Amino acid sequence: MVFSPKGGVGTTTVAVNIATLAAQVHPGRALLVDLDLQFGQVATHLNLAASHSLIDLARDEESVRDPDLLAPFLAEHQSGLRVLQAPGSPELAQLVTGRNVERLISGLSSVFEVVVVDSGSTLDERSLAALELADRIVIPITPELGSLKALSTMLDYLNEIGSLMSKATFVLNNLFAKDLLKASDIEGALGTRIAMELPYDPLVYLKAVNEGVPVLTGSPKSAPADKLGKLATTALGNDSTPQPSTAVERRRGFARLLHRA
Ligand SMILES: Nc1ncnc2c1ncn2[C@@H]1O[C@H](COP(=O)(O)OP(=O)(O)OP(=O)(O)O)[C@@H](O)[C@H]1O
Ligand SMILES: [Mg+2]
Image (cartoon, rainbow, N blue to C red; front, side, top):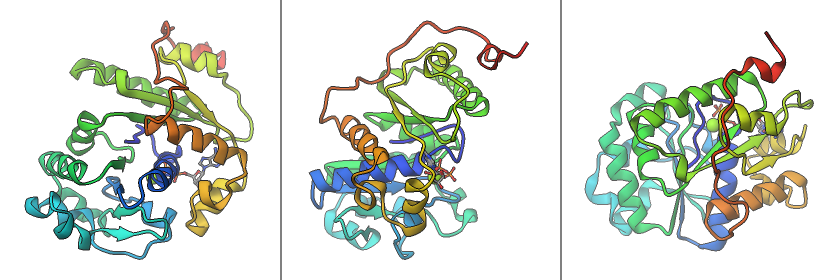
């Protein structure tokens, strides 16, 4: 699953591209779940028309485990990727409980070879249930203090309730044209290794969202596609490099990152 404690950092871009590769590797057996319950944009990134949403399925325990009953709830992308869409209105999000998500994801995992989850950026009982069940957690971060502080707070919090670090892969998404923070400094401040960097590109990612065609298929020869492909391979467990994140010595204080007092 892909999660970030801060929005707008590339979570959906990463999830959609991992799922795109999953659909190529496991035709008809890959599912992308939009668990960004209030304003999920997976359908936009894939140019899918609105269909049944997670709300319809989350409370239907029987259908969740049965491929035939399940099929009508899912949208089918032209790549063969199946998609369970986010609810169409933010007020519906509150109808889904952590227990619903737990049953939903474990049921879907028994039907599909790969289930990729875009968990958005809200840490609550629903995303925690998904974090708990995930085999791997990809966490995009941007080289910006707000994103790093949010991640640091989340890591402290999660360490209190049980460590998820062993299955986390941190990805530095260079969302900005200029980098003021170095990857090694970020690693020191967070106390964890960054597994991969996604390059900045002024056009490729934006075009992907606006046209609803994932970077991997829409701009396959681009540098972002190269990195996203490698990340997806790692996330799907088909490659041993780069390794999931390992701890590095944590240096307290983010201010030093920006040479602030
Ligand atoms: N490395 C990058 N360089 C340039 N633009 C990028 C990069 N990564 C993502 N973007 C763009 O940033 C925007 C946000 O990306 P995306 O929707 O994947 O993020 P998100 O974390 O899912 O956001 P939200 O919190 O709104 O769900 C998109 O317009 C995307 O095209
Ligand atoms: Mg998103």
